[in-house]
Image (cartoon, rainbow, N blue to C red; front, side):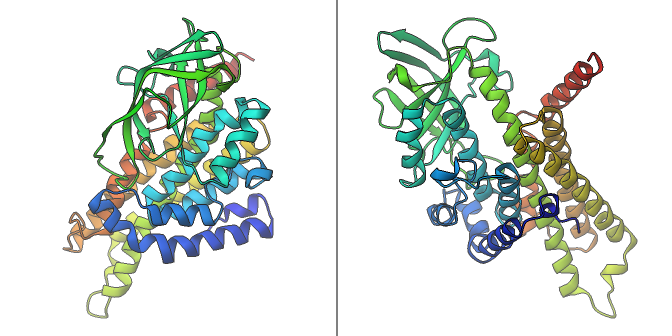
Length: 388
């Protein structure tokens, strides 16, 4: 099988992957079904992720970051955990996404103040961008930030905020003027007066992740909490996507690999001389197709992450990876449910790990830009490149 660490041939990355795989298999995986069934945020898993430095991978090294190769390290960590629990792997992604505007847009004092709170103080961060009337179209947000002396006053509502109810810090996108370049990011603390948490969403998949509404009513934010310059919000959000979309692809790969492993283990346990399930041609075809899709998706995913680490433009590859890997995960989990059907087993029941993975895979096609949006991004980048 293709080894992603061969792209950056370091023993450190190999040891990192092996360590995270053991943690995911032994500590996080056994809790995954219960977390999904009860739909609760797993504080024990969160603590483990902090213990192993997985929630600061993309931070500067002095604040607990991985250092060189951090985008690849993020993908490896997400993939290994998603094999056993997609909800837990999502926490790595949202921590990287939410901290991105702070790391890349925050003034020196902001980073010195808040990054230690997040790393040493173990404060989760949430990313408040999506709104009821602005989903994939980031430029259409309605939340406003109006300058008032040495502060900005924020008003608006955000939805589908991953970690919204458990975060201590928020990166909030708001309009500071009209037009495409009229949005800006702000760092907002959980304790801010006027910030409140709304409904906790009940989702199809990845139910162990906390997803809420967040309301901002006359929230007073110091002007120094502006991340980047006014009007740079859209640009920061797009660069954030270039980092996060390969990680979503890695999550989809992990889910698909976990699903394949579930079927293979089942066949090995049930296979006998009298009943040779492994020789069934349909089952063999599904397993072969699944393996091809996973390997192809991994190549795209880690190529995009490598480009990101090298500071090169990975917009097209990031969207390709996210789109391909998530579509592949959905196809693989669907086909494997059909394999259970062929075997007269009940893969669609709640007791089946595969049923959970099928639902988890669907979300990878939706967040960080739907796959319909990814195809638009890919086509636009192709046309842009063709025109020099």
